[in-house]
Image (cartoon, rainbow, N blue to C red; front, top):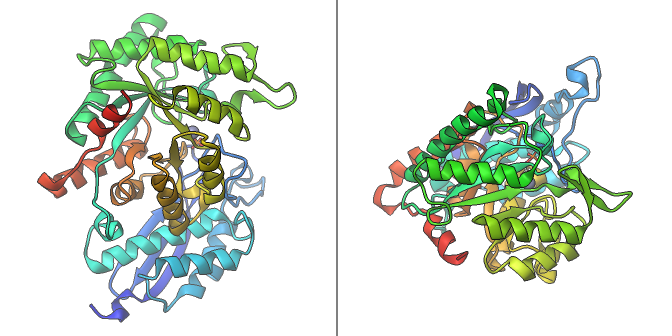
Length: 432
Ligand code: PGA
Ligand code: ZN
C-alpha cells in the first residue's frame, strides 16, 4: 500500500442530532483510498474536570446548544492543518490538534471538534488498510469481547423520577460469549418491564436517557430489589451468572454547601453513604459501584476500595475523567480499582489509550463507556474490543443509539469466530 493512499485528503464536519435532540459534531475524513466518520457523544452528568464541549451559546438556535463554532473549527482550522499528513500517524496528529487548541481543557477549539477529527482519522486509516476498525486499532493487543454492563433502571439526571442513583445495571458475567450475555440482558429487561408495569402501573415502563426504565420509585434499595427479582424471573441466577452494578454518580446528589448527600429524600454524610453501599452489597450481588462519592473526595474512594475492593469493582468516572493526571493520583492513593473510559472526557484517541494503559498497568479494571447523549455511531464497540477493556457500558439493550454498540459487538464476535475471547467469566472469578 503506498503512503499516498494514507494521506489525509479532506476533512468535513457538520452539525447532526444526538439522542436528546441536541446538536453534536460529526466529522468525515477522507484519505487517498479510505473514509472514516465519527459522531461525538455528549454527557448530562459531567465531571467538572472534563475536556470542554464547545457550544455556541446562541439562544436563538437550539437554546444555545448549537455546535456551529466547533464545526467551523474543524472545517477551517483543524482539518486544513492536517491535510497531506499520513493518517497512520495518529499520536502525532492528535498532538497537533491538542497544540492547535493550546488550552488545558481543549476549551478554545472544543473537545467535541478535536475528538471528531481524532476518531474519524483512526477510522479512515483503518479503512485504508481494508481492515475492520477494531483489528487495525488492536495493533499488538489481543482483541477481546467486552462484558456488557446494561443500565436497565435509570435515575438521577437521566430520568424524571426520584431515584438518587443514576444507573442500575445488570452484569451478565457467567457466559462464554457476548451473544449469550446480551440475550441474558435482553430477557431480564423484558422480565423487569412486566414486573414494573404490574407493580407501579403503565407509566413505570417509560424509559430514561439510556433506555432503562424510569419507574416512580424513590428508594435505591427497592430499585435493586426489582432488578434482582427480574433476574430470577427471567430464569437466571443472581450472583451466579448475573451480577448487579450501580453508577451512583454521587456528584449529582451531593450538596457542596452542607457537605451532605441527598439519598432517598434524606440528607446523609459520606460515612452514612459508605454504610449504605455496604448494606446494599450484603443484600444483593452488587459487584460494581461507580462514582460512590463526589469527584473531589479521593479519601472516601480510598476507604471504600480498602473496605470492599477485594470483592467489588469500584469505578472512577467523574473522579478520573479519563485523564492521566487524575488516574495517576488515584493509583497513588489507591482510590478505586477500575477506570471508566470515556473518549470525549479527554478529547483524543491517543490520550484515551494513555489513560487505559496507565490504569491497566496498575491492575485496574477497565470499562469503556458511551455517554447518555449518543448517536447511532458504533465506534466505541470496536474501541473496546481493540483496547481489550473487558467491559463496556452502553446503556439498556434497547433504543437504537444503545443497540448500535451491542449489535456491532455481535458482528465482531461472529467475525472473530473461535478466536473470540469474552471477559465475563474472568470478571466473576476475580470478584468472588
Ligand atoms: P453521562 O452519564 O454521559 O450523562 O455523563 C454516564 C455516566 O455517568 O457514566
Ligand atoms: Zn458515571
